[in-house]
Image (cartoon, rainbow over all chains, first blue to last red; front, side, top):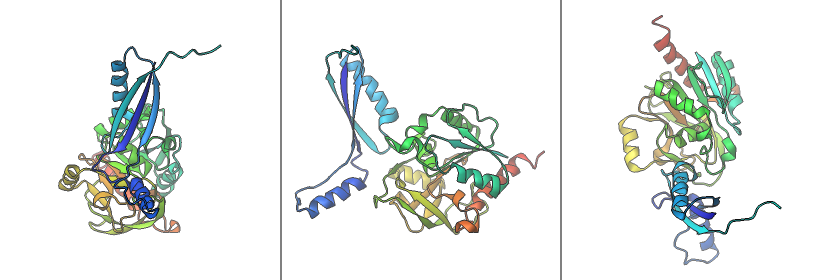
Amino acid sequence: MFKVMVHVTLKESVLDPQGSAVKKSLHTMQYEEVQDVRIGKYMELDIQADSEQAARARVTEMCEKLLSNPVIEDYEIQIQECPQQVTGG
Amino acid sequence: MKFAVLVFPGSNCDVDMYHAIKDGLQMDVDYVWHHQTDLSAYDGILLPGGFSYGDYLRSGAIARFAPVMGEVQKAAKEGKLILGVCNGFQVLLEAGLLPGAMRRNDSLKFRCFHTPLEVVNNQTAFTTQYDQGEIISIPIAHGDGNYYCDPATLQDLEKNNQIVFKYQENPNGSVADIAGVINKQGNVLGMMPHPERAVETLLGSADGKRLFTSILANWRERHVTNV
């Protein structure tokens, strides 16, 4: 069992209206040191796979097809092995 | 000419679209549920606005994998006329039938009002009954209507005359004021404003009606005059 953490963010070249609004608000609150804010999505997937490599390959495919839109978004995948969960009982 | 209005869970402008065809255009129209896999009976395919699958993940991202979309891809290749409005446009973008993607409006607000649009290309099967450069009034209603494409794609769109409508007063931050684009073959149009909500003066504008009468006139020219 693997826990896969996927971060989807807008590409650097794509203006992030939500991030800009939050940055402006932080500046208003006197956090002027904030240079940039990007808002993205975080997803956690529990995946059954034979190896970390296999899990990564599958999730990469999911990111390309559904989890991100490659026209405007980038994604980052982190994987962590989890002990097999006992179900039922 | 027979039309299909595709209905996804969360479509909410399907009834307006149906009304525009049935009562505005006086043509045959059916609602077609998202898990149907045969669109061969239809000459025109309409993807209405709304919030397909609740806009979860991204607008249009989940609808793009609905069973009916395989048939839409096939119909697009066959040259059938396909119109996506608002969420329908977002679905066509996610499906790769049109270039680009939608971002949240730059104001971060859901914007809903009549807005002036320029007809940038009146040589498409959807716009021949407008004048080139004509300013029409069509309502918008969207939160994710900020059209984006990279500079190379924009150049391509301009070169091939694929930009069909532009905003006069850009309400969402769209690249180059783009409100609607067509594919290279000229049979798939996507637009954020709602022409189906502007088919009679009672609704505040009848400027949307000519989009539908253009579709009909061009289809008839191709299919009826030779009979």
